[in-house]
Amino acid sequence: MIDKQVKTTADAVAGVRDGSTVLVAGFGAVGVADNLLDALHEQGARELTIVANNSGNGDYGLARLINSGRVRKVICSYPRSGDYSAFLKAYRANSLELELVPQGTISERMRCHAAGLGGFFSPVSAGTKLGEGKETREIDGRLHVFEKPLKGDVALIKANKADRWGNLTYIKSARNFNPVMAMAAELTVVEVDQVVELGELDPEAVVTPSIFVDRVVVVGANV
Amino acid sequence: MIPLTREQMAWRAAQDLPEGAYVNLGIGIPTLAASYVPAGREVIFHSENGILGMGPKPEPGKEDPYMVDAGKNLTTLVAGGCFVHHADAFLMIRGGHLDVSLLGAFEVSEKGDLANWTTEDPAFPPGVGGAMDLAVGAKAIRVIMEHTSKNGEPRILNACTYPLTAAGCVKRIYTNLAVIDVTPQGLFVIEMIPGMTLEKLQTLTEPNLHLASHWQVLAPPEAPEARAA
Image (cartoon, rainbow over all chains, first blue to last red):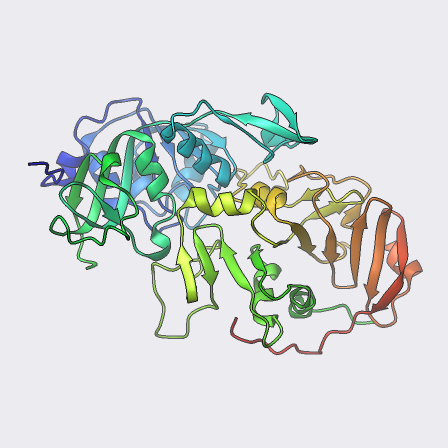
């Protein structure tokens, strides 16, 4: 019998290696797997590359990993969001590297890896500072830059409901990066509010199909 | 001569949003435009974080922590609205599916180059968010901004001094003094506030301005009435 549910968040993040690229879903503080981020902090992996839209809040979740010196590099579109003091301190101390990527380019680079493609040409950032050094091509008279796929070793996903196969649903705008990141990592780990019986999720409403999911852990009570 | 308020600038831009349009509003003054869509006109607002059919800010007591807009402020969903994931939200932006992208700006050039993502302040990390995506994809890219800087310096320039967000993308500029169209023949003033002259406006604008033959007086209501979108 397939059962992807694990008992604890520690089980969920077991085996994450030093130097891993970790896809951290969420937009601001919405749709972020904070419990898995805390578990990763406990687990102890170092030299992490984090892919996220923002750079963490306060001193929990991603910000806590940064404060503890576990993060070597952040790939994000907008680090200046909410209370990003943890990131700012590390950035000013030059203890982490920032790769700034337009928001749509980050999500598409991950989708591209998930789709088994070798990259894509995009008009976004062409002719700007963020496009400097990239391969360019004029397509239908418009300048494009080449973007490579972006792959995660592990994705930390926040969903609402799962079944034992790992089919997922989300709540409203907390969906954001979660479905794309769930598809783009070697190991996809999900914290959910609730696990329901197989067959209970409306098949028309499943957003992330189980094929992309490896581990599920129940953390909350937002039923 | 009284320059327009932020609300009046947003009101003016909202009058140009056509019935049935899918529209993304940038952070700042553009966000205000949602409240000034003329009564009886249905416009559908898109938010980069995966909301199509975004409504006004929630009434007190009806806040939902799972509903945030691009600025991470609490928002709502209108009837008919739906959610998509990030790659699809940006597919809509980049792929030309939005009718209008209404953006804030630091500077716009004569050719429609846009600078709105960084002032290169060395004390802070840069952030680009969805700015570059929003500046390339929509069918019409329009800017709302104050005509001059706080020091009175022109913000419509021969060439932008801040790093570009995208080249040649802006088609219309709404300022607190005028409405200006960016065309291959140059900048055409289509509206000016009462008492403004082309000569006076030119002293506040670096590139050469042309007065459109059909130009009109820019006179929004004194205090535009905000409606729930």
